[in-house]
Image 1 (tube, helix red, strand yellow):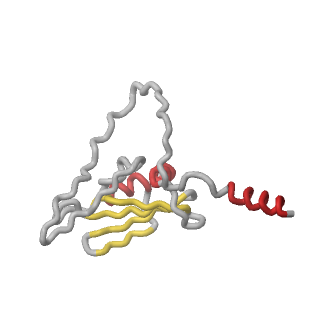
Image 2 (tube, one colour):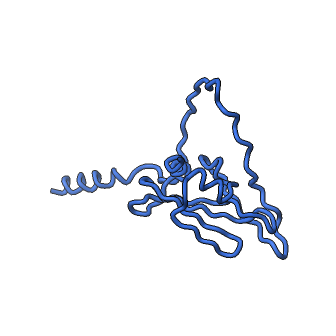
Image 3 (cartoon, helix red, strand yellow):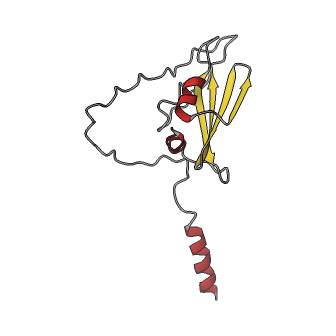
Length: 146
């Protein structure tokens, strides 16, 4: 009987083993020839904040894989990428946009990078739509892109 109990416990714990959902996954890029009519890559978005001062607090800007084209984007640009936000919350000069799809929910936080500037995306959080558990941010961004 003791052997069966140990086997059942081991089998149930086997499903818990693996990389955390937010952990980066290493993979080798697949090299493919670029199509002849491929558009030029977009210019990198500004992601450097001005230094903090007595009247301005510089935001920390998240740098993570899969977020290119999102971090540094304006509210207008994010709406072009993901469609209309499900939630739009403004607090002072900051803004939170929420985008939702079948796979995940993406919260994008926008703060000004310079004093008196329009807010731009500086941080994102992603979670499963079904149970709220964290998921890989880059994978969620890819799943929600139009």
